[in-house]
Image 1 (cartoon, rainbow, N blue to C red):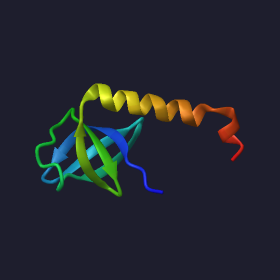
Image 2 (image 1 turned 30 degrees about the vertical axis):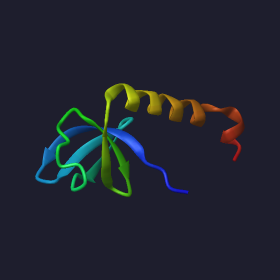
Image 3 (image 1 turned 30 degrees about the horizontal axis):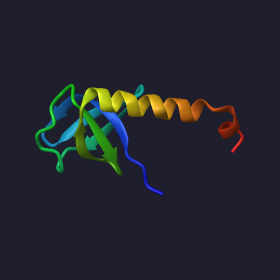
Amino acid sequence: MCIAVPGKILSIEKNTAQVNFSGARRQVALDLVPKARKGDYVLVHAGFAIQVLEESEAEETLKLFEEIYSREDLKKL
């Protein structure tokens, strides 16, 4: 299964962005979303931003991830 994760662009240099994923910072290629700007939320898969997200949509997705990962029954897996 593949999963894409939302993150917030902190800075951009050429076609690469520094993206914040709930405190973890990673370099992400912006080749597929050339209109992405600093402060935008992007959906990232395999090191590539694949879509620019509305802030509310990104925050809702991050909240769902947090709920899933905090479930006690899943921590045993």
